[in-house]
Image (cartoon, rainbow, N blue to C red; front, side):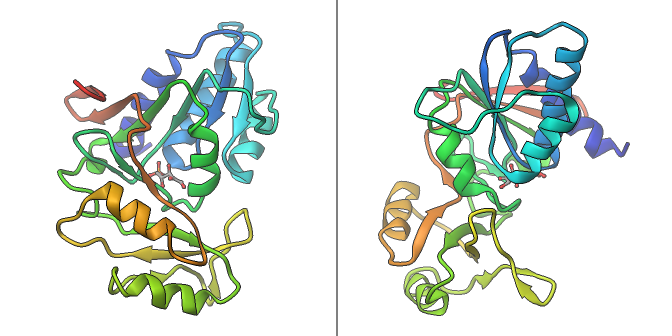
Length: 229
Ligand SMILES: O=C(CO)[C@H](O)[C@H](O)COP(=O)(O)O
């Protein structure tokens, strides 16, 4: 395992230590969330946890949950006790960019119902300002997508439609993703409002005011960041 993978796993283990028996747990998506799902499965198998129900944020996480023996249910209106997920960028106030893994809509729809959203990442995901390192994924409906992109480019110039080889990338919801280039300085809440008000947009990878805490692993150890502290 590479050093970076070991750090991701370390962060994941810290988050899974917060999971208690009988909880309904949101299962994130991506290479860091994968370690959390595997650890929940291990703790179930070893009898350290019982009565866990997982709610998956993607087809890939659902399949992994099944493989490691986590019973799952589809999302319903009941709250989740906790959700654990990765992120592409983490700002100092724990606002996030998510969605490079393509699961932003299911992640947001699921995690907004979580009493606690715990983010796990390695130190390369920390930024001072969202948009510093990653594009902002925006899920858009396929119908008229070129028109939607043109509307978005009126206030977010640049960016590109996500591709998978020669084909347009398709999300679990059957939609496309426009990876927008964020400006150097912007008001995240105002930008979120404007993007979501654009015809053809499903949702954005901005997760604002949602994360309770983040475990961020660096070579010197795991840093625990708490929103509002
Ligand atoms: O938002 C996501 C998927 O939609 C992921 O959480 C995000 O892309 C981080 O992934 P990784 O842990 O592989 O870096």
